[in-house]
Length: 148
Image (tube, rainbow, N blue to C red; front, top):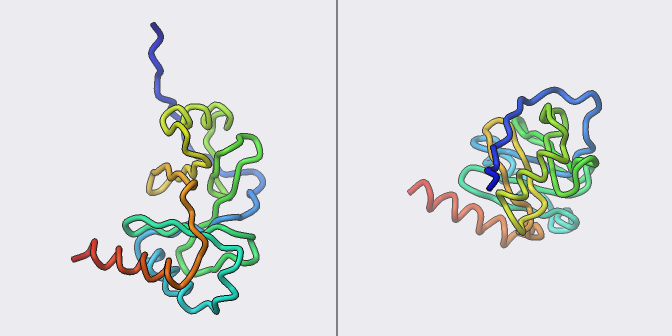
């Protein structure tokens, strides 16, 4: 019987940044990004999708449609590893296909997976919803309830 050993790696700067396809924000930056999205006209929601957690907001779409606020970071799919999204400017120091397979064993049937360095998390992106005023209101309500 073989035992799976968790992979250990360090993050390193990328030689070439990935093309951005997601804005990732947490804490105050997530709340600022949420406020910025509320300012968009409904037609600017087209092509954007979002998912959120406690003090976390991820918005995906074409790079030129992604909003910017202070503190937001960007991510994109890693061409070397199907189903793995990473920060645009950092990557693990292990082969990405090996990292992707390890994460997929931990999160079966959940793809793609966003792997993030600081704070450390793995976020399945398979439940993104199209951006809308209703989705933004729901995210705001959930954040307010979580703080209460």
